[in-house]
Image (cartoon, rainbow, N blue to C red):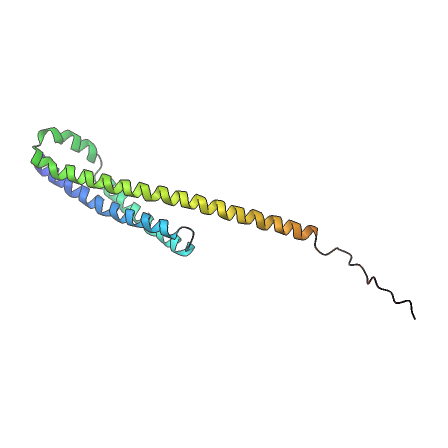
Length: 149
């Protein structure tokens, strides 16, 4: 029974890993889009939400996966536990890629935010300067008077 359950756990982990790989791909794509295509970035966020929803659905369908694995692992031979261990290692590697890409995206987004903030501040200062040196409210009349007449 434990060997059958281990095979089922490996299958569940493979399904999750496939979705994690999609998430990793989207995270890498996000890094490229930051600072450029705002519409593409918004669409990508929606795709990420869909992937996350599927991952949540899979997690809800198999609660306690880790606890179950920890409970049956000691009763399995190395050959029986190898597929699950391999999937766990693969999932861990993919999640590390996701975290790395998300961290890079966060760093780039913060840089973009600082750049935009700086540009907005400069524009605001330019507007204030223009207002300070702009047209007076009472335009002065002509200064030249021809007295030769």
